[in-house]
Structures are given as C-alpha cells and as structure tokens.
Length: 233
Ligand SMILES: Nc1ncnc2c1ncn2[C@@H]1O[C@H](COP(=O)(O)OP(=O)(O)OP(=O)(O)O)[C@@H](O)[C@H]1O
Image (tube, rainbow, N blue to C red):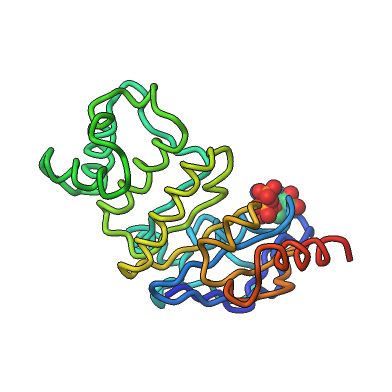
C-alpha cells in the first residue's frame, strides 16, 4: 500500500509538489495526469526514495521511502519511459543479469516464463536487445520487476512513443499485474490510456492534486474535457 500524506517538495524555493495526499491500495492502479512540470516525476522520485519530502510523509507498506529506501526499493519495480538494458545481451541474458544483481538466480526456463508472462514472444528471447522495439524493452523491464516479485510498480510515461498495439499490450499487462495484487502508479500524458488502464486518476497542476476520480465515473471524452478545463483555468 502506497501512502503519501501531505507531502511537499520544493527545489530552490520553487514548489514542485504541494500538500499531496494520495493512497493506492494493493491491486489498484493509479494514474497521475498533469502538464509538463506538474510534479508527476517528483512524486515518483519521492516514492522511489530518491527525494526526501520537505514536509509530510511518503511510505510504502508503512516504510518511509526515503529513510528506509534500501528495503523499500526491494519491493519496487521502476519502469522509466526508456528502459535501460544492455544492448549486446539478449532479453534472457538481461533478465538473468538484473536478477543476479538483486541476488536472485533463476533457470533459463524460469527466465523465459517471466518474459513470456510479460508478453515478450519466445522468438525474441535470445535476440540481442539492440534490435528490440521500445515496447519489447519495456516488457523486459517489467519482467525484471516481476521476477524480483515487486509489490509496487512505478511507471513514468510508460506509453509514450509506443504504437497502439504495444500500448494496448502494456495496458493488459498492467491490469494482469494489478489483478495478481500489485500496486501500480503510472504517470502519463495519455488521457485515454490512463482512463482505460487505471482504476483511479489524479490530476496534478502546479504540484497540487486538483482532482481525484475513479475511471468508471467518466468517459474518455469527459475526462479530456475535465483535464483541459483544469489546465486552462
Ligand atoms: N532536481 C530538480 N531540480 C530543480 N527543479 C526540479 C528538479 N526536479 C523537478 N524540478 C522542478 O519541479 C517541477 C515539477 O517537475 P516534475 O519533473 O516533477 O514534473 P512532471 O509532471 O514530471 O513533468 P513532465 O511531464 O515534464 O515530466 C518543475 O518545475 C521542475 O522544473
């Protein structure tokens, strides 16, 4: 369970996140929408324990994400917009390498099951990652988190630059992970994708949560109107 309670963060006197309170339960997907500079990445960086909030509390499973960063990060899978992998290693070799770094050793067959479970087709498993599309690299990134048995997935702009099919596959994968009990936060500019994949949506503006709603409460068009209204006023 993710708990952000009245968290604030400024950089050189400039507010990035202000009095932010959000909870995300096990099995839930929260989408964070907001314009450039709204505070989405700062929120994710506080959850990752890279940034200490100036005020308030940020915790995952009741552990302070900054003070207990080492323990907290073991529970987290972080998937940035561009997943960094070793280009001259295959998908299986990358997964094996990152699992070993985390102290986990799996057989080749087990690694392949993780990759398949995250949607990477068998034919790609032993090909060099340098030839992978962005969507394929993302699947490996998620497989790394999955193999680490991450309880929390934090995704920053995951659908950006993905073609509709890859983006749709990513949505299905996130829904599957949530159904298995993962807690997921996804920062995005993609209103339609967020509406489609997330259970709840938070709209950030100038570091403040200006609106929180359940996806089922609005159609994609209504969400877009609502979002634009907040951005313009
Ligand atoms: N390390 C930093 N040093 C100084 N200012 C920062 C730093 N990180 C973020 N900021 C500022 O904090 C504010 C919020 O930035 P943040 O990156 O969290 O927004 P965002 O919603 O993720 O934006 P984007 O959609 O462009 O990624 C911005 O004004 C940004 O310039």
